Image 1: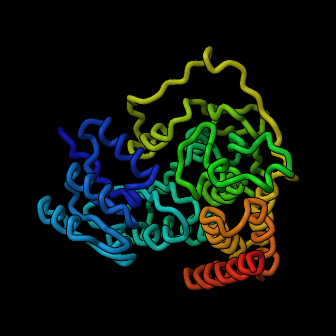
Image 2: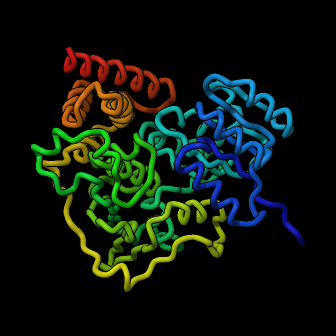
Image 3: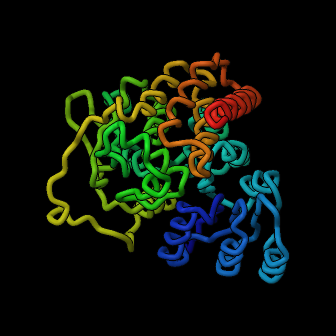
Length: 389
């Protein structure tokens, strides 16, 4: 019996993960049908995507121009507008799977909408799990839907744990490339420029994620994500530096054995696994050459030079809304660094100051999380203003 293609909505289709997702869809030769696309503001790019895939609906969060309206009319695509339109698209009844490739806390509402509509969600938007992991896990269990990780590290853990009894897991080890600043001393780190920070040695990502990778806060956020995705405590989640980015993570079992997932550093591989899960399909992308890769080594992260990683563990220990506060403050601080308002060396003190001032509340609902998010953005803005007077 012939089966219909899996129907897919891609939230954030013009970003790095979104574009890679569409590459995977193209490579799978009709196995997946794009029924929904969204962009915040890249109207020219999403216009090209709409022409190519002819989705049944598309959402543009910021101002919509006449070209997009004309393209949607010509393709029969329903055009949705603003954040409300994005949330509506996430719950689009014709999709089977939603890829959340959004950046920042703006991904929380659409994730909950997709879950509430009974959709499986492939999550690349780490901030939604960092800020609202408990809520999202609770709602997904209630709705009986699957959360499938897209980040290469969490995908690796997910694959290594498949078929295993979770009680047999002692700990997981998340790997980090170390980013572009790994070998700089503390004095040089304080003076790095935006262009230096954005030169990641192995991955091509959006600017916000690349800055977080440089500070290692991105890895800290992944620790918090892993806590929710795999039901592990902070002391069961370790981080090591593996500079070649071919060992994507490891799982250690109670008998002392370790399983690791190795592949070429190509995000299309974990994306494809998420799209085709529970099947594993042949991929048209990079293959890992073990001989060419050569020796692989592991290092402990230097928390004196990269203290933002410790902030994530601290937020996880504080519990409640602390992680939401750290995530929101980081969005503000990174945006200020990218626009030149603060120095790279200001990011950690600002985040530490905001987190220290926060009194965590129970993160039981979206209202509490949104209040914490708003407070953190205001507090981070004040901390930035104090440094720029």
